[in-house]
Image (cartoon, rainbow over all chains, first blue to last red):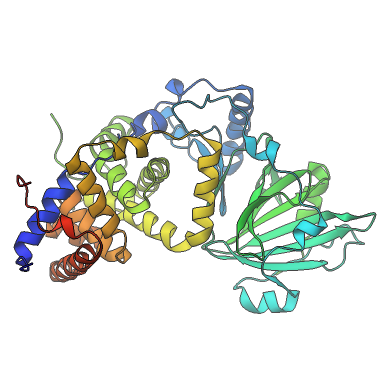
Length: 258
Length: 192
């Protein structure tokens, strides 16, 4: 075949590009500008909306007009994005409960042991650009039993403490997620605004994708309980615990100084 | 009548202006993100984030420059970061997301489109074998039909660099197409 001159090839590319079948562009104005015309929210959505308002107040984000208030249909705290309602799909009702937190069981010890990136605290510290901080509360907690270093678009350290009373369970899991890490979406069934050291934090429920030794990413929830999310500087912290929110905040506020 | 794609002289976008900005530019922003991310839902999500960032950065933009390249620059930056950062993690998340929601029918619809659309989609598949900058440059020039000067603003480079990038990207694309989709080359419009 005789090569075509570059200009012909360029014309061919242009011609094909013009035929490209884009999916219909969504009208972002309905998402961004007019919260009043969004799909009806389910009970969880209304719940989340209340928490959203409280959280926005806590954040001090400018909400000078309905347009500005409507800019967000999700909360983002550090590396974690939380959808306040499922994204629109043709046949999925808005009020359908997120299957994530229903279908994903907690990870028992044999499960946690197959997570990729197990290392030591010292080795992890040598590889992340932020100081790894440990809770000093509860006083008997001590050093983590397992330390994992995973790449979630940025370095993420996972600290795991076993439950001494229930060896097959995890007492506490603390994710310390560095700058540049993935913005992840979860649609929690429980969402409450709170604070850590006076700064905005979220109390939510939902599983996370974690990498196993086989190299696969799997949706895991390390502790059957809730998740406290907060940020300090460029680091996002995520604490999984079966304790109540007040205790979780106390643990969060006990992190050793960087 | 649509306004010129020029930055508005106001210091910050009031509600009416902001709605107009979104209305005018949401389609090219979404299309670029769809081309770069390959997922309509993710493109819509990132388009939303693009406008959110634009809103926040409104007072920092250069009001003497057109708005669309500035918005596309934000969108391309977000898409590049996502694609670079996520890798296998992102693909796993997408697989999971697909499991959570019924298929939208979009892919089936694409598969059932007319032959020209199928050709265009095969070209897209070829483009996706290229590096991110090559892809972005081709999308901006031939899919969104931006001028070289506008692309220079989106990519924050000189026009000469855009010309070089286009030349290289077309050359590399042709190599991929010759190897994997040879029928796309030899059939000019209107033949066969």
